[in-house]
Length: 87
Image 1 (cartoon, helix red, strand yellow):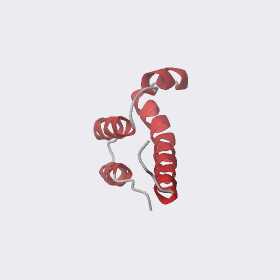
Image 2 (cartoon, rainbow, N blue to C red):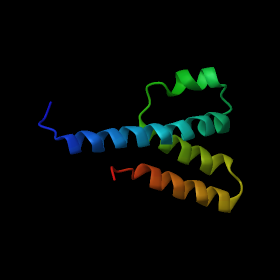
Image 3 (cartoon, rainbow, N blue to C red):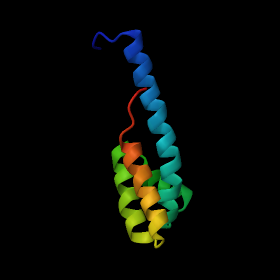
């Protein structure tokens, strides 16, 4: 492993937790919009990356959400979620 400092490891840990929180929000919403049951969604999304989940959610929201303000709000949230960086 590279010579990571304790600060580097803490920042990496914060990023992993932040990505996990985002995916914990996105996966149920995405599976609901796609009409997938929880068990099927778990298998379908098991090996997908953080960015894949966000891209799929963006594409699905664009297709399935008819309320323009809600669609904009989701798309703004997805954009911010893609920019997760350690604080």
